Image 1: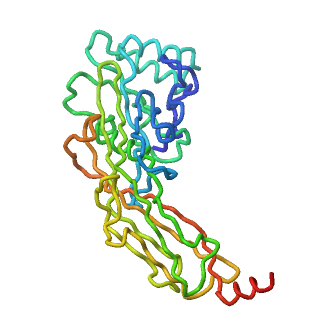
Image 2: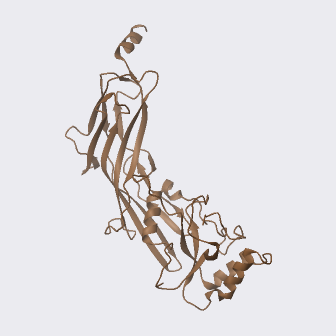
Image 3: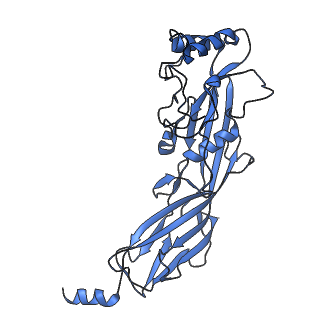
Length: 327
């Protein structure tokens, strides 16, 4: 079904004080901005502080078809809390309405009072509900006994947590510097692209510790390659690629010339600009704990990408000389 198909009375307050059927989260990706935050109702995000002083942005997957989970189940209520929630959210619903039917269904089940286990409730990655979620109004909450022999495929697991952690990860932009600067480049004059590398790996942990359910996963992004693209085929070379290796001050480009890429533009940008871009490829692995140094798990995650983009202006040297002589 589509996630908009919320149960009737989904806007009522639920037992934990947040909106029934909503995310119960302060901000879907808040952890990616501050290094700490929340996703869903009880998932916590914690990210290491990147060593680089450059700006950061959300990691981009190298696999354009990869998507993080849209929704999942989290532990929410004991049987007694669940009864209170259902009666508070759906009690007094009009006769014959889906809300009344939902309450009757749960009441008939006696809310599993006296049984060991918890009621788990669907949670969403964001508040838009714009993507399909494999949950129906009949199983907005599911009963999960201890050591569930056939766990629901949408229950939160370390693998789900790893995907949420990857989606929340912020990566530093490639620390590159142009000499001359971007608005003073000349045709047939080499432009030095220097890599001011102090990159280090970046890890992000997503964890849940609620009502005895303790799970965690940590994604670890390690910089492995740098690519520089001049933004036009009229450049020599059009691109430079370097492997990144671990040095004393962090990961740096593996080249004898100190990771410099000397680009020579062969044609001016005229009245426009060229879209210069540098990108870092990050190898992403994950562990099934809060320890970034734990053993890597499968299935793997796609590589991450971080980019630095800048419009550059390239002029003919003669035009610059004429302009200088007229001053």
